[in-house]
Amino acid sequence: MIASPYILMPLLLFIAYLTSRFAIKKNRDPYFWFGLGFLFGILAPLILTFLPRVVKKEDIMDQIPLDLTPKSPEPPFPHMDWYYLDQSHQQIGPLSFQLFKDAYEAGHIQNDSYIWNDSMTEWVVLSTKENILETLKPEL
Image (tube, rainbow, N blue to C red; front, side, top):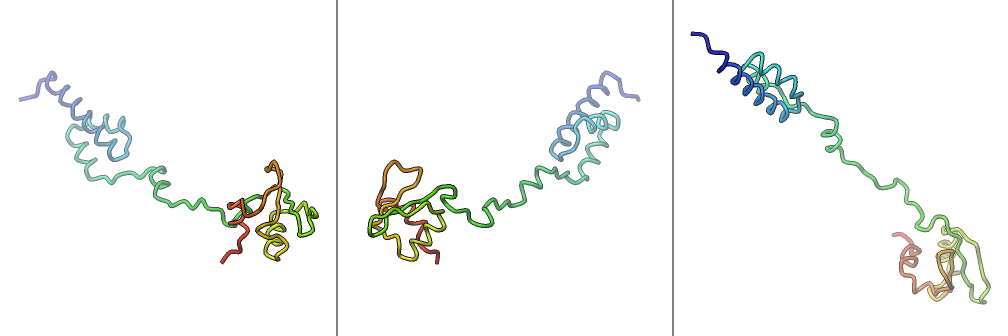
């Protein structure tokens, strides 16, 4: 007995739909697999079952650990000119931050020295600026 087209057509459409949904889970083209499911019936989802999952580029990129830390540390205040008042209250500067740090390490700048750069509105005592003081401390 031959199946009626009124039963066969909806059955093939249902199998094609299920095959396309299964293809999405396997990262395969759902339109292509819908067509195969419609043409070959239950054979298409069986073939799809044994095929491996396709790995997309996005999935591979998510698995690669990205190290976004800079390779060489950038100076914390790279583009500022620094000034300080020495023991006799003479203004010294402009200095790059590296020279400013060298002067601190050499003892020319003390924790009670007044410092200034373009981002400050007035001269301040170095010990009141903890973020700058932390940056000036020598690395261990």
